Length: 78
Image 1 (cartoon, rainbow, N blue to C red):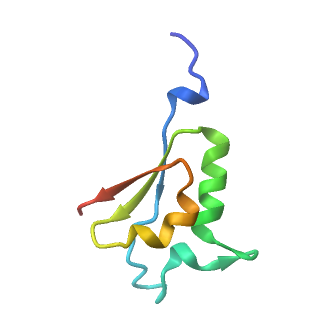
Image 2: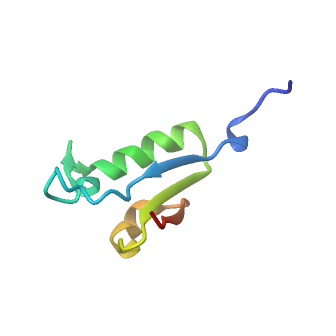
Image 3: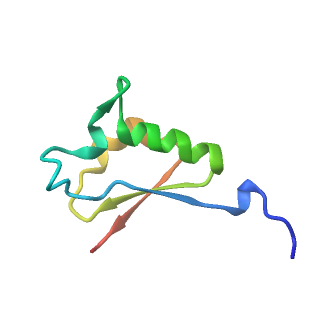
């Protein structure tokens, strides 16, 4: 079996929940001065440069425009 490098991996950051128990958009909840989703994208980018940001079907992608960077935005229809 050959070794994989980081370019062989894709990391998906799941940000499509409706945060019903959290009562506000959890992805944008502040943590150490930045939204949680921004922290997650930073951590994911340390694993691989190939990132997916997974949003729900009804979420506004524009809200994530400053966070997306080079990540692909995909929709979870469920």
